[in-house]
Length: 136
Length: 499
Image (tube, each protein chain N blue to C red):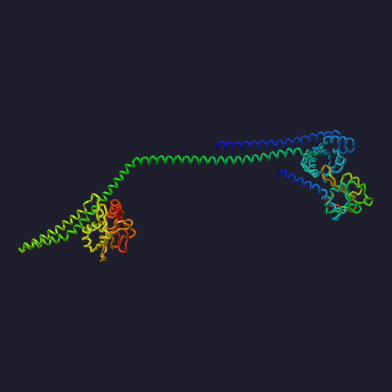
């Protein structure tokens, strides 16, 4: 019985942790990179379920008000937003999307984080030493 | 019964322990075999894949695969065939940067396009040091980890693809331990159940032992009680036999005791008589002294007158008459004493005043010589039936004691003894009261005991009052009571109402 309760509790905690894993990672690295505490971000449909209920970011519905675009599909972006920095949520978008500064995605159930040094420089952002090893 | 309990308890605990021991051993074997079979399986697959890659590789795997998309597709199709729910990921990695511990994909067996990695796609595995270790040791290893994405337990198997004695790539197989965990969990549950059963068995074992202990104790107490009962029974038997023997000899002993009592009574009676005789002789001596002196003086006078030739017939006649008269008095005294001493064989009626008069004749002179005045008050001349001599003995005894008490009082100039005859609630009473000081309170309850006396050695026998009480109770069915007055003693001779 104790084992069952412990298992359920562990699973619950794990699920809770999983739900917040990506958000926590964003909350940890993006303010450092952008050097601001509260960042206006625009999130695509796929990532809305992940980036929510955050105190660090203002999630804007209009990409023109955003400092950063997060997602993997930005097909219907306004022209004013096309030049804004993007943070990809898949390897493909990281490789193919323009203005991508970095990416976070899952590969083989392992979290993968990537940065593009040239775009970091382009947008005058800051990449701390601890994250430089993930930069290309 | 206790032995059966103990045997059951021991059997229960041994069987429980044996079953648990067998289960624990079997459990470990099942876990090991199940786990090892999975490892062996992925090892075989890895070997096959590695062999295939080696067959198609000229010098370098990366170059070979980079240059042939068809070969990559073929290998990936091959890897796809192994993918099941249990064996989830099959891919081939090559070390990209040893310092960064980063790798890149060479092959990926993923079916889903979103999951499928591209050739040369950078990849940062969990536990990268393990991957580096495979490169260094050139040996397959595996490790368990929890997938953050699926939150389930997985095993990652790393198999080195060695070409020209150099690890060029690692085959990575991720497989679930779900089934193994189910088995493990079931076995753990069984283990828990066994532990509970074993604990219960232990509790039962202890309870049975406890009951056995109580039972044993009860048996011991029972045995003890039985032994005690046996001993008691034996004692009772012995006592019963003793009582039986006692009963058999009781009659004889009673006869002996009666005889002893009779002899004792006779002895007391004898002593009493001797004492009485002594008293009588003393009293006769007192009675005779005066006439004897008178006779002696008269005879001396007669003898002197005769020697002098002056004895006249008239004087001789007068003195002879006097001597005869004195002798007659002495003779009467003897008769009086003889009447007193002679036992009355039959009970007869007599007046109490008569008894008092007779006693005064016997002891009166003696008392008068000691300046003891006797006052007699007869309120009613009561007639009673009984042995008069015995009653007189009682009265003389009381008067003698009073006389002896007065002898110790030289200063007493008003010695008297009051004798009163009266009825109290129709009961005839003779009360004898003196002013001789009385008997001390502390010895009053002993005065009727045999051989108890306060008199000097040789003067008292200690049986007078004992005999007096005995006479009053046995011969008259009456009583003798003592009470202390202001200056002396008071004895009440209580006679029967119907006399």
